[in-house]
Length: 159
Image 1 (tube, rainbow, N blue to C red):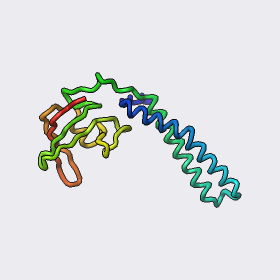
Image 2: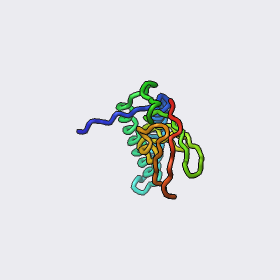
Image 3: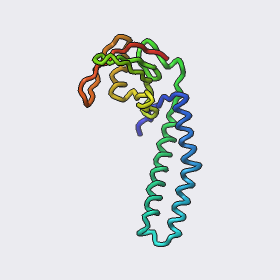
Image 4: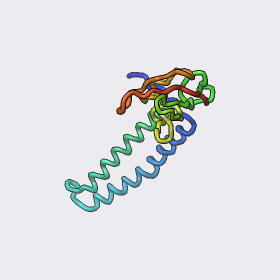
């Protein structure tokens, strides 16, 4: 069996995953179990859509619990010393300049399990993340987007 990949998480990301896991185990599991119990009470489960829906939700919840437990088992809390300012690394807050438009974009590089683009948290495995990882201030990178090639200049790297 292949060794599990270590997942670096911020304190905020670790807390969020732990809270989601606790909610799924203590609240959602019981809600779905109650829905299944009620659906069975309706009688014939072979043509009972409520029963089918509840069983599907139960399978989804159990799958998510397994995924979260595996992620947390392999998680390592990102220390302040893990975050570099000389090059872009996990945890770096990066200011990018869109070379064409002159617009600045602020992103934080996180692991894929923490990414949330609308909050400015992008994965190191995303197209932009892959291109800027390991680069220094003043580097220019090209990122292929649906609208064509976008060039970003790295303006600032900070913790």
